[in-house]
Image 1 (cartoon, rainbow, N blue to C red):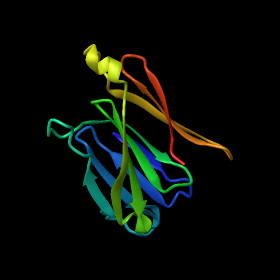
Image 2: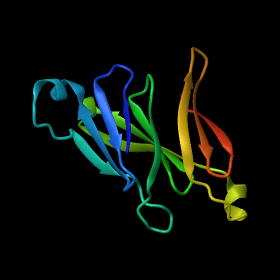
Image 3: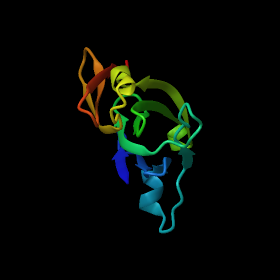
Image 4: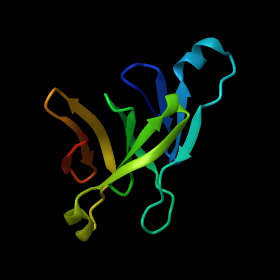
Length: 137
């Protein structure tokens, strides 16, 4: 299970290995004893039509988005909208093509963000050791 919050701490995002991502309103968590998620969605299916497993997750600062790394080496960026009431896939970054040709494992292992005044990079590593950077400005 992966857990992260947005930079303003208003939205909590949880994700399970089954590819299900839930968005929670932190304000609702403070007020109510029994809480349900504001929005639930499943990670997009892989190119062969199978449901992808979530391997890594990170909210993206200053963008109301969440980056999700999958077992197939893709990172999917979902925009969180209307205070967590919905999320839609904004873009997809596919990992190392050379690893796929060599049949190396390519699961995303870790996602981090490096954000400053000049750039906003989502960095991720894959199981076989590749490191990728993705400018999400």
